[in-house]
Image 1: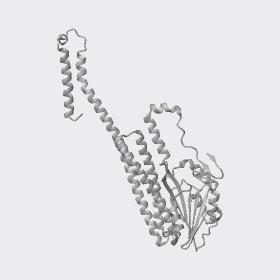
Image 2: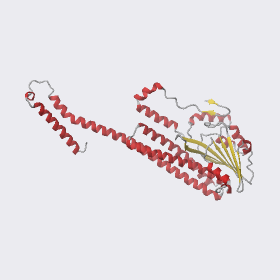
Image 3: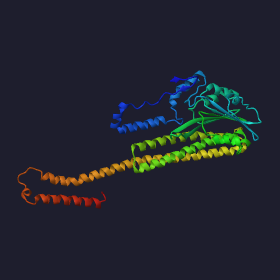
Length: 403
């Protein structure tokens, strides 16, 4: 492992580049290369975080042994950025300077605060924010650890909520980001791995005083933030379903090895979504079941709606995964059908030529006493017999619907 500045670690490359000297071997053994590709997809797409968790297990254990805070994950931006909204029904003030943002007063009941942090690799800054908000050290440790599963923890002074945002980028690759939320009495703090547009519509509502955000408490703001994350899941599933429709068409018309690879790739992506949504729903269930005092009675219906939306997303993910499983079966069935058609044609041709070869073999023998050899029309007679046999076999095969 290679250590960067501070407590940040940069992961090693998990796959070796394809070497030119292996090209000939790949051409000679395409099936073996296909199986290796499938195994690589399985290894890469195994976890819900999109990161090889085994790589970071030693880092996590070493950090715990030394009792220090360590950023665990991939550094996605160079400089940490902060954004603070201080709002109430009458006004909204937006700040972006680090000094202004971390001067938040969580005990001020006159205004609500939304502090958004872009970049969680600066452990010292995250720790300082934790001290300002009076967060437990365990909470700060979970914020800077991007390999954990979604969860919710209810503390005396706040609620900690961790989720995964899954969205496809411009290159149609699955992009997974951990987001952490801390809900206090009059503040919400959100931690993102990088700058994103997940919450742009919420910022616009705050600035323009649209909807209920500025009229409600911070628990309503948290529900809107979580709803935006769920929207990303639905958008990703829609994108995958569009790809599945194209793959289905190719599977039915012209199945190739690349088709199977696309099917397996999408299956792994859907599996990631399912594994992320299950603990997401579990966390929402725990919030509604425990009846924490940080979720107001009039805003609980929004969290129930989030739970229902999460259930719908899980059902859609299951349906997409089932469709991909069916495409896998169709792919192998199509290959088997093609093989059967090929074998049927070859068998038919071989069967037709068996009696013709038999006749040609008889008259190819070098015996002196063969009466037909001396007959003037013997050659034409043998041709006629062979043509009659050929025509008869073709007619018979057609009546049996073998052709």
